[in-house]
Image (cartoon, rainbow, N blue to C red; front, side, top):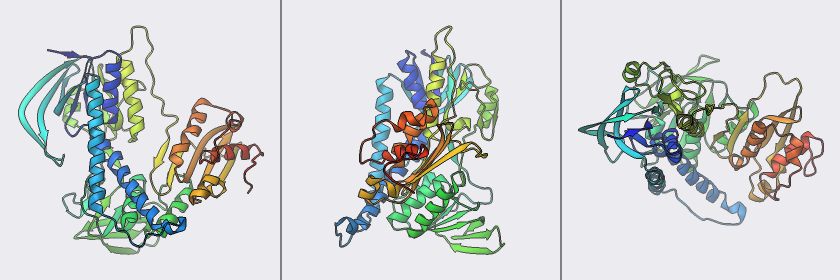
Length: 471
């Protein structure tokens, strides 16, 4: 019987990254996945949603074609083809991850993994239905012996107790991302990241969308100007945005909500309602109790090295409750893998959560990195609108702005709303992480005309020497 360096339960970004890194370092790894390889991110999350957002972008570009001198007399959204392409991208991504794991000689087991002890994992083998939602077990079980176990069991959508999840008109993000027909109307409960991304997809493909948000503004974790600007842009695109409304009930194709300021109650016809109030870690209470693991409803407890309280058992990704961002899970997977495979006398690697870029794939996109201080004493502020950037002018994407917060000539936080900002924010993330003085970056030649020039513009403006715009 093979004894593995690690058995990983869960094949999402955190799990399969840990598997690859352990294998690179010479360890023998087994990965157990009860759903499709790639798990939520590949099959019901990042990959399909961003695929559909690309279709939404193309639809918007065609609708705006006349501005660029390209007249399109008529066009129609073929949602069946949108869904077909989405599914093709999923399958290609899933196959790519499988190929990567096989290249590194990772043993893949399809089925449900259960921890028996820190050195034993039982796998109840099974096969998925084509829809990927139903596991049919073949009765064959395997016992895997290992030196370490990594829990990477992911997360699931949060559904409030007063909502009947069996109501066919109520969908989670997992289900909505798999639909084959475009809904005429869609009500979204929640104006956070997931809600805005789905509003972007469906409003640009032709669905009438309504967002109901409990707080006074959407994206409450972001700068207020970003919240107000994306709200205006959504409404210009036909989305109804209701903030400070509490959802009271969803039943029989109707949503009842209460205005938190006035107490007024409204009823909205809603044949399809997306509940997008967040995600929570998948907690297997019986298995965790048997293993002696410490956990809360938020996730499995881990230290800075990704160790649980039980020696030899580690946890990464959404299962830890630290973040539901795939790139955080990937980093956690690498940290756990390198700590498992460290040589005698080598220090444990710590997970650093200080600098985490966050992206919202709306149109235009929104990004943020670093922490904006509550006390702005001693903080310098620089703001550059995208209307001042030549690339944005050429492509007719003037909406948005970049905001940078600076302390003692070092960037400490940045947020932006604008076309392709997710591709330029990493430069600022690196500056924050490496504590690079703003002059050191502003003096580097930035290619012209590019969106990245707006970073140089913001840094030069903070130094009083902007040469490409004035306010």
